[in-house]
Length: 316
Image (tube, rainbow, N blue to C red):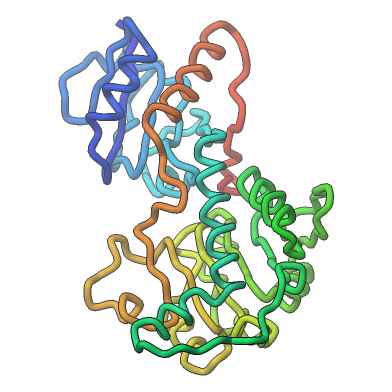
């Protein structure tokens, strides 16, 4: 029986097994540690899989990431060479991410967290100098499918939007930058900086003190705002806290962290200028993602090409 192996290390795997069983009728869906014929496994699907999950599978044709990122897969030192790794590009996940990004840009624009503090203190204070969205510049670091969708929706709300990618890329209606020089330019011109890029050797720790010193004062929104919805490895959390204390950053919205779950003793939990969310900016919905993967599998088994294959050299 043709088999799909689910390598899931940080979620409950059973909802995923149920959805894949529904969209791949007649298949066997198995988990690491169960007894199954390793020669029957044609495809794998993973999120933070146990080390070696996909080793010694002689007929494995492809491995699908169950989330937007793929760095978790490449951490596996026993990941089989030559087997394509496929990213999830799904409208459901894309929409969820854009909702999160737009929501927090609007909250920064309207100083919602500041007013939350006034409410707790029972203070009737009106910050009279209220900018419009068109006064605020949002820079998106990472202009893949998620970044481009967020850019489009932010523009609809009136924000001035710029984007950055590692290599040159044209996006209609968006001022684009690329490379090291482009990174300096977009950081210097962003009142709100949104990190959406993948975690690679080049981007690890990129959100650090050196970068924060290049951000503008953004006085209209109480200081520049950092939003990280990419990966925790992009950020230096000590530098973020120091920048918040010094005023180089006015606020930080963090959905991802160097250690997850975020340790209970982390000062990020209680810092008045930090919003913490539990890596749920764009949750992977089992029904939507399973349907996407199943369609890719059916196309591939019928002789078609896989789409959104990751380049291992670049990590995305």
